[in-house]
Image (cartoon, rainbow over all chains, first blue to last red; front, side, top):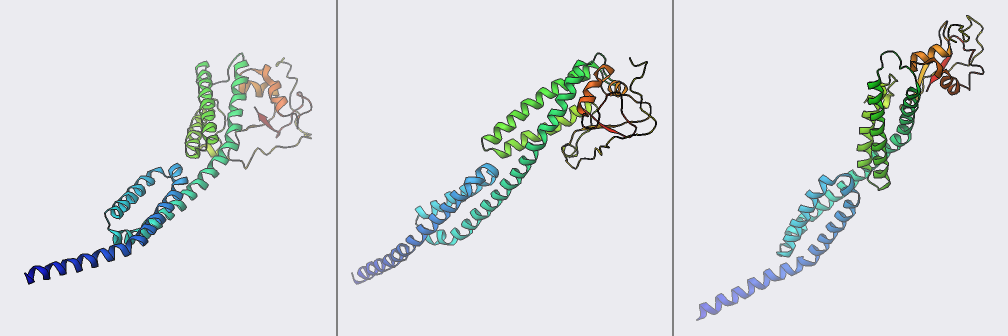
Length: 199
Length: 81
């Protein structure tokens, strides 16, 4: 009987000690988890637009941290939280850098490409009035150039719309395909290809 | 019209402004033509458009340096629209 009582007392003491430690870590763990969630939310504002492929990985790690918290593994939460907060901050910085890079690219494209398209349009208009095409240019070539100009115009409008909608990555991607097509059309028309279109 | 060669370039005595044509703008798609001896706007239009009748397009694009379509000078750099 004494042995049973002894074991019972020991069990009570140990479980009390363990639950005491857990309760002590819960508050800081909850604060750490909130800090991580706030950092991730802040990072995702730009990262989901400019570095979406990296957001998924971060979300998975936050979910794992929440899981540890819900299972009462507060020490693990406290241990993992700082690294995850740092990762979120790195992602926010990388997204800001990507946004700045795309903004710069779009500014260059949006000021330069309309002039290229205008030059193509002028030449196509003039050649369309010509009774005879210049040496080395067939009517099929001119037709190809006209079709190319239509594609360029459509793609450029789509790029502009993407930019207006705040999707710079999409706008720059579409504008880059306009650059490629414009270089093709300029070559068909025997016009010089600007440096910016040669890359 | 071309036979009379009304826009023959004088051999010397150019009073034109020269256009460099070397834009620093990476998106500059301007095509330039440097006038050589014996050229006329008609001939230049034929070269680029296949039709000399379109010479006025080149003249209008270069009104800043051309006062008369019959007078172009050797070495002038003309914008070809």
